[in-house]
Length: 112
Length: 113
Image (cartoon, rainbow over all chains, first blue to last red; front, side):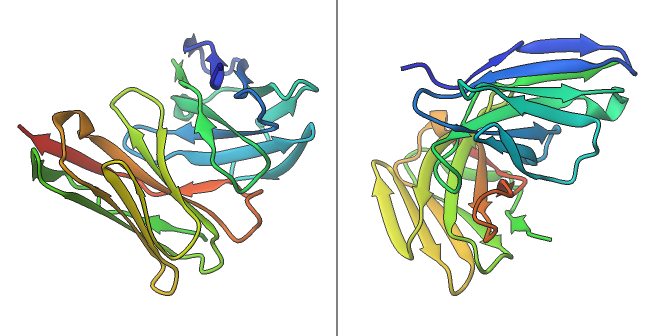
């Protein structure tokens, strides 16, 4: 049983560029949430997708956008990258909301 | 603003002893509580979840929840060097979970051989 998978694992981008991160949820899960984790901090909630809709978002600017596909996989897009966007980006999947969430291995994004 | 507070540590515990990790949360309506273990450079791994007041045991791990005091704890018995990691407390808020998990900053646990 495959767990949550994310791609790519590492990424280096230049300030001002755009990036797309991908996530496949754990088998049987229908809800995907995205988090940003800076060094030494806990993960911060970006947004959550359920039934292909963004259900809620955290305190992140509109440069952060996403999508959920009919197979429940999801993408996170970040436009106009800033140096401060450098972080570990985590995808978590769950069966519905408010239940156990399992994380993928993360994508380490470095903006130079 | 929902907050989850943890002592950042480091918490140093001798091998074989009990490690006790604590967490408080601000959202009184929170329903679900989770403990994640995160090794350096890796992603968080779910190790325990608890929804009701009281204790929940799973192997060497025990989660304790006191909603009246807004307090969650994790006990690790017979601590092993492989338990050395950062432990993150996370809470689904009263917004039905659609507002995502709120995490503490984590407690860095060191098990001394």
